Length: 88
Image (cartoon, rainbow, N blue to C red; front, side, top):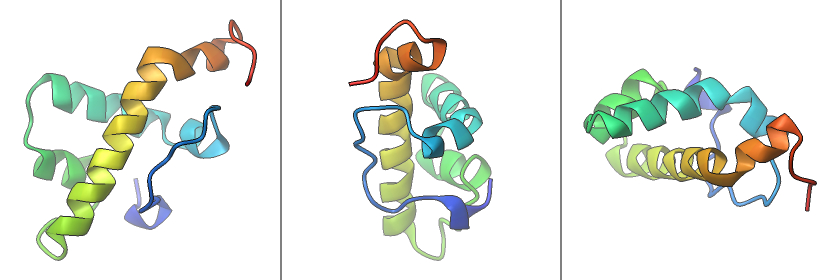
């Protein structure tokens, strides 16, 4: 993933977006890294392609925003992908 493709701001859309679809693989990898208790810096670097040393505050924020969205996708957003829940 290229870090230039990442949003800096929180992702709070109540529906699955084109952005979500484009980042599904990253979301899954972030969830895997979190489940394995990987350091957030490693996930931000390897999964999101961020330069953690250059701007650790920004990298942590972007990592957290995307991990939160990945958790939302795994808890409820996925239903929209498989068509079992109507878009709200």
